[in-house]
Length: 210
Image (cartoon, rainbow, N blue to C red; front, side, top):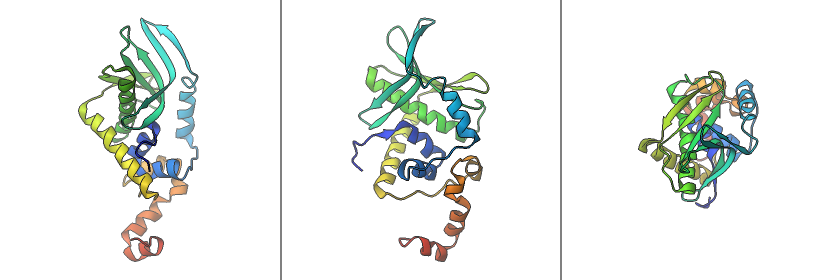
């Protein structure tokens, strides 16, 4: 894959949740809905229409196209609040409650951080933090765009590019709870894949490179 080919910002969240989910969606172009994805779509319907308004001294942009040429990222921010001096503050909308398991919340944080890096390059202003707005609790969770999170964005982009170059689906996550919640569970068949991985002889039948 050409290093300048764009990586969708949404791909980072998919990769962080499960590399195989990323592969099915972005390599195989497979997607199916379940209750979780339908709820997410309903939440995003509020912010998917481009537009802007002024609120409490802020210019609020909705569905704002964003990019980062250095990393090759491309996507759209749900909401960006611009302060009077032009400093952007990204707000990503999610369904559910802000009281998520730490590992799942980290997936959301990564997507938000990628948006922050895009906005920094576009505006030449530091984005020190952003927020995730959770529809069920109707509360924000503020996320500091710290050095470790920035590094994780860069390493995830590298991992995604490597997967694209190989052109093969990555293995599923080891967290079976994520598999049960995934809309692609039936397509993925993670239980079968785990059995194959545990049996070298069976794996060779399905993977000649094993």
